[in-house]
Length: 401
Image (cartoon, rainbow, N blue to C red; front, side, top):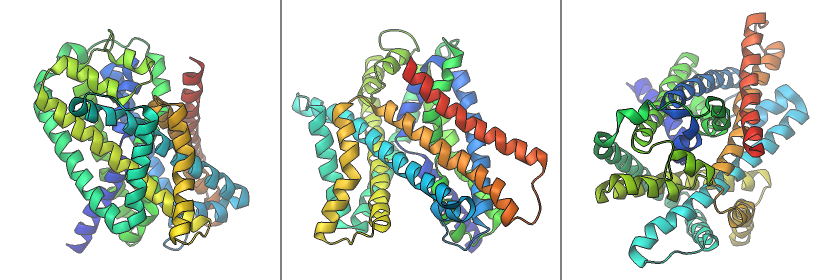
């Protein structure tokens, strides 16, 4: 029973690490592809990152429990590999915080306007979010834990209620719309990569499951399958309610920057339901805030440990400036850059969660493996790295168009 309980907890930890604010961007980022192709890409991305999860665990098992990505890179790839891992890890966390700041500021107006009948400037919304979140982080882990539990409850309740009420409004004809441009699905790969980025928690899951490789594989499979189902149902509802084309369509939202408020406005115009809109706002707020809180807290601790900054009053001020300063500047200059920041985050995820695990297993097998990798195995690792290159290419194409 103890093993089953640990397996269940590990699976949920993987699922919880994956599901976040990226879910709001998925249907918009894949707008031009239509529901059918978007579902196919969800499944392909899930499978690739599932295999990458197995690679992370395989490499991690060569070292003592507690060894993280930076430690594995240092021992297998040397100081250059360690430096690259640090670099991409910092860029990933900064891009995620920047994305959540822009999305949260946009959403704040959705919550305030119906009550106060005025909109606050984007820069003020970003400052409000930083003030609130930094205040919670300042108070310590217990405050973060309590707030996160409330937000997760709101996320689950809002999502379940939204699907139950809005699903009858789904129009099958919209789900069968032909893609406008099938090749532009490449541009959605960075957001897809961000949405399946749970690998950073796997060294912790390994400790929790006592380095049992078979249990770890199953936990990764079922834990990553939960986000796949959640994303597929969310896309089903959004694509079935909002047409791809038209003034308020998904393509128009994507081309204008893909802000959270535009997606909510489009649903409001189509559904005309106070209950659905309330559930949507609770869900969107909880998804953004919980992701924001989790990433910001982990980054706060990461910087404190990496730079050896003591968490005194002065130290906390320095940590808050380092954690929120660069993302806040991005939010001030690119107030509609939610999907753009998530996309760049996807490029960094592609390195950390695709290329790095493949290299760790490829090079590490020569030093620590009991047998040499076969040609077929190396070919499969090359395909995984090629997928990461496609993710980066998707961002390049997106920037050029």
